[in-house]
Length: 391
Image (cartoon, rainbow, N blue to C red; front, top):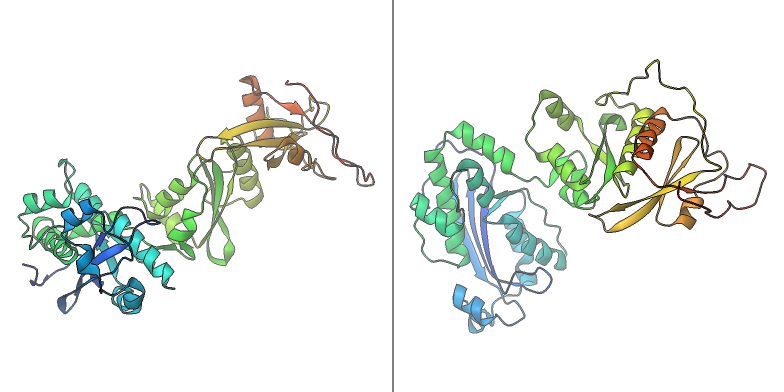
């Protein structure tokens, strides 16, 4: 079965089915002991495998599970000695593995230590099986072997398990209509380059918690401003998730760059989002309407600027947001730094969006501290320290 050829493959790109054996599950503490690769392209399939000297003892339970012993890897090549050849073999091909983040993560770490940047597009056969067979409860490799009558030549050896994935891939082409299979693969695949210059590595640096983000298109034109309590997850949904509408599809196709700002909490995200929409006026956002009852200005009920504290459970941090005369000035990690946001000219224009948001939260009991006034342009003195009482 492993040598058969697909007459109408769901993908027309080069593919590698990969499996690793390791000394354990930690990228920092453990190393690869064996690599198995099944390469599939327009001219058929080929295989490649090697043991790898991990440079550390293999725990007894791992030896028992895989059958790979310390004696077997003694004298095998170290990863750095095969890195260049292996990178050339994998580069530019769709990386398919079972629990693919595990295998990709180990290879990426090993390649990085060897001086290579390994960032392939990735398809996980666990996720693909769940998407195609949602009523099934088990999607481990043993379950796939049983369910789809796959033929293992061994278990927990790298090439044998990679070959099982190739068998599974072929079996799917006989069970699932190609157009359906192609659509599910497209939804399940994780692409390293998501859009324009946006990569998975870049998204990994986005805030895990509350924040605001803006998408830019061609010519750095702003397209859309959004907020989320899980910015990183929301960005992935925008760029790699299933499109629920034609508007979402059009937006994802236009994105070339993204910026974000952690806000330390949901109120800060609301205030920042409103400011960015008013400033950038992106076409995929609705600019809030101004009603007849909305003020064009409003009296400021405090002696000076105010600060209020928010905590972001996801980021494990707290911040102080600063507002003066219904204008949001930003946030800082301490009251002393928050006072530093009060600089000459910061009072600016009345922000209707800030007035609306604060009116709502003040009515719910938002506690604020009164800060000093911003110094005048000619006044060299620093801003007064935070005073006062909770309002």
